[in-house]
Figure 1 (cartoon, rainbow, N blue to C red):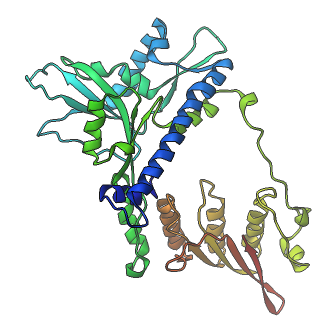
Figure 2 (cartoon, helix red, strand yellow; figure 1 turned 30 degrees about the vertical axis):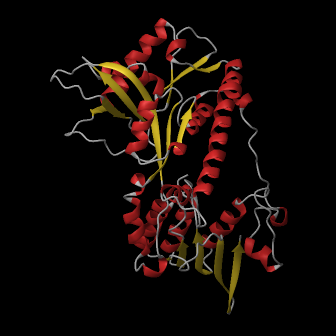
Length: 404
């Protein structure tokens, strides 16, 4: 949705029947996506939740909580959640607030008058991203059961507390997905890093492409949101559960149940590089080595780089970077190579989708310590994993390469 839906949506809005993206392509996309989302929540409600319950892991709604649990949830709401919520009642002085990409929000329809006699009907409650989406209820009775509540459920059951003297007649949580592709014209861009950094400032507020609401959302509230975000009916996805199922992956870390986890896969050390204690340079002089990843470990490549960094005969290291993830090992090794006086050149792909900010930071860090940083080939993305090591061997310079 964040990358490819926009062209189909614009075609539907402009009633385009002749281009590559058309009303028909949007309708087909929406139909397929609705079917997938429906299946996704069927699996969540009919398969996953019952399976977890059989293993004493439960995510309970307000109606399923006993009196003791409700008191705990209320205390949690008052101490941890409510101080961070800012409900906004819409009126001429308080227009519809900016809603960030894929953030959790509530829309509330109010009745009655507030303390100032106003009868404004719609309010929006934005939920900060820093709040955990799953909260475990302490169990003082030493039961084996692990009981959780979702943040949505906690807020939903206490919405009326946010609007004293008003009645809450209806509500729904909702989430907006926005177009997040950074449009960069390589030919017209003098400084790619600057252009990407400017684009990142606005990514969270791109054009809306999808609206998710709770399955019980009224037609009135749904239409209000569709109009607000300028979306057609087919772009609305009512869901029977939380709007972001990805957050439920946290359960794997919040419950001590190793028997429910997949057995971790351990790739083996490349056979042709055995034993791992030997010198890579001695082995590579004998011939090329084929590594079959992910079945054989990428650790061998990192070990090769490590040896090159600490080998006094290595004069230069050239490395491409597409994504580094959260492991700092690669960047730390390149930093150490610079510190040891080696010539280090790094090709950093700034346009690695959704890792642009991380890669910009990596590029700036490498430049700051003295590495030469390049940004690849204009018009192309550098996906390849390449490492070139230049080593002094007697009177000759010899090059060793990793290509992936």
